Image (cartoon, rainbow, N blue to C red):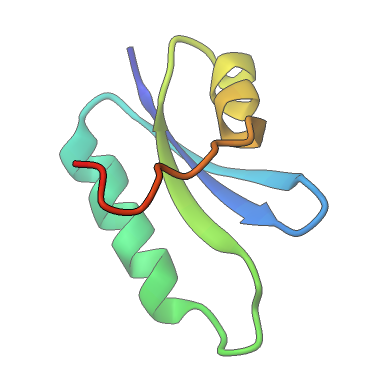
Length: 72
């Protein structure tokens, strides 16, 4: 399964930025994009491991509840 790189902006706006066969390539692209990002840009650069771009987008849009404080 490939790794997908996305820019995630407020109001669930997703922009696909890349697809990589290995994590190292996806991570390197994400780090480069984060370093080049303007200070006022609200986008989060995220890497997602998924079978398809649709699955990656679905995983990025899921709301995750935080763990209770103190739980390991």
